[in-house]
Length: 267
Length: 267
Image 1 (cartoon, rainbow over the protein chains, first blue to last red):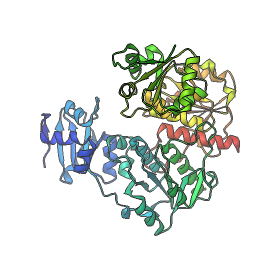
Image 2: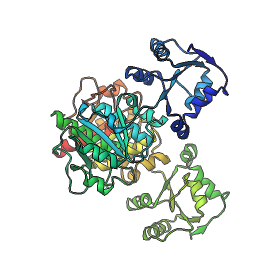
Image 3: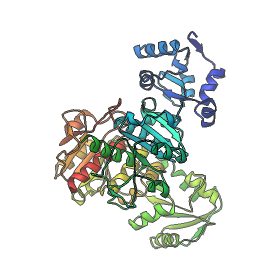
Image 4: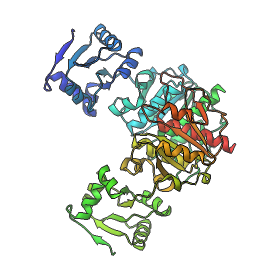
């Protein structure tokens, strides 16, 4: 399909793109939005090409934009030029970047995960804050984890805020979604150490006997992990809590633990 | 002042409380809102009593609510009972908790900080995300830090989102705000090691020669620290980056570093 120019807010394609900012439309369409040349380039280099690429009609030329356009055309996608105002309506930002893309969501079933592809995996249970979820993806990338496994009812990883907070890791990290009742049997089919921060029968997180593939699990922001999930862990660890509170932000706890596991497995 | 009941949205006190959700009003009034019995109890136990306490007229009795009310009355504050609807308008949440309070902001000048009161301090430069700022306060509490020093133009630590993310640490941690041009001379007046994550002339963060009082600094979410600020550090450390990205979320980086400093100083 050749490049098209659209200048009307009421164009059906524009309206469909705008609707992707809402969860219900996103879930019905199974498509999501990402914005910015850097993010879209990360996606392309990870083999993820948008179905629809939207570019501001007045933009500075850039070889990476050209590369994106070619990739989308080669994949049979749609390339649209539009006004900065309309681009701003699509992305919901006052200062939109020059490009945005609508991607098809991909399969996030657990059986696509190859646990032996990495020695660290992050697991989040009922995580409700999309910023925390995106931050965990970003941390997973940084520690060289294989990906993030979402257990029970989590925030939508394809929501705008999660995608943004992931800083591109949504495209590079493996992502799976499962109920606990599916996850635990899957985990026990092979090797894999399930680790969580806990206050019960736990050992200090420094120097604990981590073993890869190590699955670092954190729970819901206000409830923490259900007791039965903690009990099912192979290793429960405690982090020092020197103040009044007895917990950390979930994404922070995951990161402190994951870096400790990384040092332990590589040390 | 005795307890008053207010049932009108247009009551000036209610309007003034609602306006505190906006930064411009908050900064003019130098007052801020906090919500929830746990948060207000943390505040009270840390010696911070709201000037105005607002309670839902239909609420379950609770000894901690009674304690709050007595504390506010003893301090000459205002105790208001109102409808759940009005309380919801004040806090901006659909499901408000039973109590909220308006607190006077306190002095955040650097000369109130006693650096020898703790061996770890967190420093944030031009941090723009209020959630990150609140999360850093929460982490500071957890590692037993003395507090958080905000450098240059940061998000408002008294904003609703920062207060909420701090999980009460806004009331228990020391907080200072300063320009870099004030902070650096202040730091050099006494002992204090300034540490930042950096890619330039840095040593691995594990096993680096940390020394208390250690000031762990992170920079702006998108720009990082200015080069001159990095140069001024006593110690530059690197964290492993095994993925595509070269940085962590700012609050995550601060936490991973702070836990390493804690282990080093206590080990």
